[in-house]
Length: 175
Image (cartoon, rainbow, N blue to C red; front, side, top):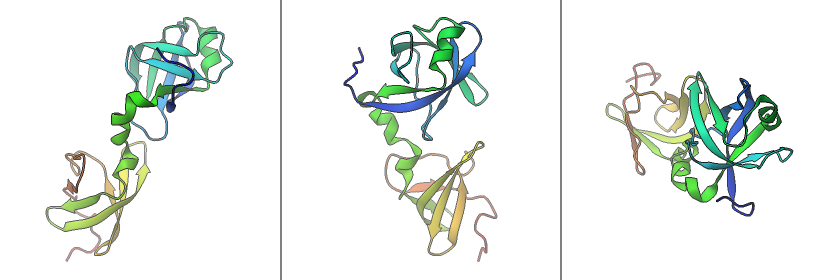
C-alpha cells in the first residue's frame, strides 16, 4: 500500500478526459519510457480531488501517441475532469531498474561503428515525435546526429560502448 511519506517520481501527465466512464488520456513525462502497468498503485496529483489520490490502474489502452487509463476510483466523466490536468506518480523504489534504462542514462556512453570505429560519446539527446537523436561530439568527424532507429541501433547493452551501424550520409565527408 502506498503512503504519503513514500518517495515518488512523476512518470506521466494526465492530459484530458476520454469518454464518460472515467478514462483519462496520459503521456509519459520527462522523456521517460511508459512505465505504467495494470494493477500498479499510483499517486495522482494535484490534491483537489473528490476521491483518494492513491489509485490502482484498472486498464491501459494505447491510442496513437497517448495511453487511455482507467483508475479504480474514477468511474465517471466528472471525476476524471478533476484529475486533468495532473500527474501520475510512482513509488521511486518500484522503478529504479526502469530509470536506469532512461535515455538520460546514455549520456557519456561511447558509440562504435563497424566501418568507422569509435565515433565519440553521446553528448546530448534530442527527443522528436518520430525517434530520438543522439548528438555525438566526435574529434574525428565533428558533431554527428545519430538517429535512434532499429536499422542503426540494434541493441543497447547495460554498460560499455554501444555498437551502431551508420546509414550512408551521416558521416559528412567520408574518406
